[in-house]
Length: 191
Image 1 (cartoon, rainbow, N blue to C red):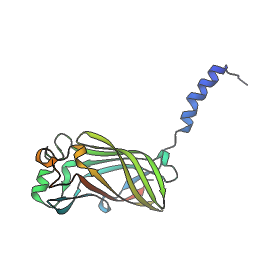
Image 2: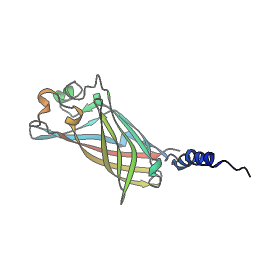
Image 3: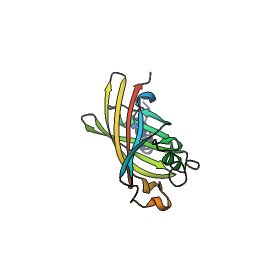
Image 4: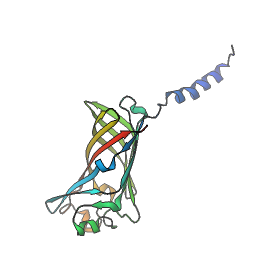
């Protein structure tokens, strides 16, 4: 048996214990984009409207029994926002709103999760829009049946905190500060 000096043994313990404590990655999931939607809701001068993003992607690793090894990185093409109103759809990619030419992608990166019970969770991460990164906690529900998962989520995002709405559109009389972003995702566990 090899005996290490006390100092060397202590150093080995400090170096090796964190490596052993790192969780193995959770299984990967592939989103069925045809059955999934990323939408938003707001209002203009008191009249509500909804919209969605036509182009987005998500890299998901999730296991309810391995939250420490779970992660999500979602990216949205900000120039793909569509509401069905030609005037609004032309305005959204401009520098006044998403500035899609300079900031073509918005992202949400979640690196920790909390189990709230009953199929309810929180994803804790960072939302970045127009180059502005802020912490965001996303509450969601999840049902897993075999290799298929269905997730729904909704969260209010303060558009002004990210600079969405410049000039006259910084005022909240016509467009409120809070925009509700909703997710409805269907995914299959990757093999």
